[in-house]
Amino acid sequence: MNKLVSIFTNGFIKENPLLVLNIGLCSALGVTTSVFNGAGMGVSMMAVLLASEIVISLFRHLIPGAIRLPIFIIIIAAFTTIVQLLLQAFVPSLYSALGVFLPLIVVNCIIMGRVEAFASKNCLGHSILDALGMGLGYTLVLIVISAIREVFGGGTLLSGTPFCVNLIGEGYRIALFNSAPGGFLVFGLLAAIVQVIKLKGADKK
Amino acid sequence: MFFDKNTSNNGEVFMEMTKTRDNLEMIKLGAVLCLYAVMACTILALVNYFTLPIITKNKALEASAAMKKVFATADSFEKIEIEGSDAISDAGVEVRDVYLAKSGDEMIGAVCTAEGATYDRAKLIVGVTTEGLISGVEFLELTDSPGFGQKARDPAFHVASGKTFTEQFIGMSTEETFIASGSAQPSERENAVSQKASKAPSRYFDAISGATITSNGVANILNVAVRVLNSIIITNRTQPSAEELTAEELNEEALNTDTQAPIDFYTDDEVSANGDRTEYTESAGM
Image: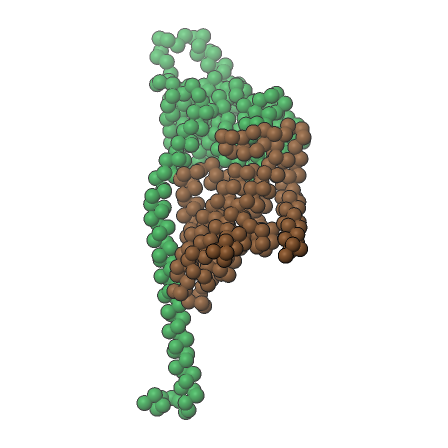
């Protein structure tokens, strides 16, 4: 049981794909200008990650080692396209907000990395837990970054949903947070905070 | 038997057999890859089959909802077929999906979509009434930067007059070309739209501070769209029967059509009640 819990929580702090492993960064910085976009991206990526890890874990003995990377890409690309079509049909607002970053999930290093390092070598149950843990870790970080950038840069919270609230007046918004430098800034600060948490945790042990 | 073939010793034979085995291995790998690809594509085709009708319906609904937004008083829209191609191009702007706005049987204006360059690209839907006033402008697509050009589409963003960016166009006359106020080089803007239109006086609208390129791009798109719509309205104007038309009304119509820039496209002979649409598309190439 401990092993299962540790696999699941791995993706939150200890091996958070964005803040610790530093993979999958471009999508994280590109779409986090609002919480709706960030959460939507996180959920889409988690869906593709989960589906890919499940399929590859099921087929892991049927994938010849020499061509495993092309086969991984075929599977990941198929699921990304499926998610894309479903979003376009059922949540068109999110589809147009994510724009080009949705098809870019195919080359998101997190999915390729986890599939290669974990799903192709572990059983189905463990792979599902890993996918959920990594996906949730990714989504949570995205939501935190988006919240900070949206509140300080756009002044709103949850714009794009029916629950949008205006928190900061137009004159007091900091435009830096809307663009790339602001994204890097917030990301760097979060990575530093996670490092502190990890070091404190190591100290206790 | 193996050893009699063109070989002199066991070592070379072994290499021959390994090469064949390698080739077989490669073919096997290729076949496995092909199999995975076929399976993936089959599943994709299935998902596409089920989502395609929903997606096309969404797009159509979005377009007609947008048309209603720019022309609230219309209750139906009639598509105008543009002969020759499916878009009219001018000054880097593409105009398509031209519809007549109708209230009952009467044409009260026209709408179209117009796409052109802003900071990135923008697709607008524009409506003009038969009186030559803008009935509404909406963004269908806008890929400019959030916090800058994207503000043009933000309902919470207001320009100097207190209205949103697209609201400020409602009711504006289309006699004059549009220019974003606060834009650095208004003369450059006038060169971007056609020579003839630039002789008309210019109508200033509030630009977005920090998004001059977006504002100028929108001005250019609007100018082209409005010229197309005004021409369409003229060629499709329903004529009242002879008894109803007094000399006064005839004179008034002549005066009104003189001041509208698009009329420059036509000679006096070509302006007629039953103007042929093909005449418009030929002169659109200017």
